[in-house]
Length: 168
Image (cartoon, rainbow, N blue to C red; front, side, top):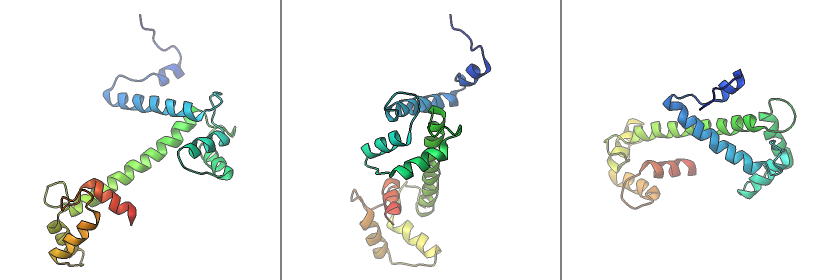
């Protein structure tokens, strides 16, 4: 027999049954697993040193001062450490920023992808550049696309567009 949450905090911590919450529960579980990897000494807190160590393992070299600043930015209770909730807040904000960048890139991609094919063609690039007052010949547009056409299909997919935008 399933027990119901007794306290208000247990109720708040319980996942609701609405379908959109299942994705949030899955994300929270992923954050818990990630938190566990960062929490090297298993004290349910992440210190600046632990953050620095884990960032180094993924190729990011943070100075101690930078790690302390990151911890301070998310440390709600002022103990100089990150608990799970603070960690989720920190990582979740970064995830939201990435989602916003992705949305903006999709919007920009849509401006150039005018033929409904899901890609930027030399013709759609020519049309958009003309609208922006930077007219180019079709051959020039083909050459521009060729520089970022990673799979050689003659068009720019959204993934290729992202690479192009990140490299500029």
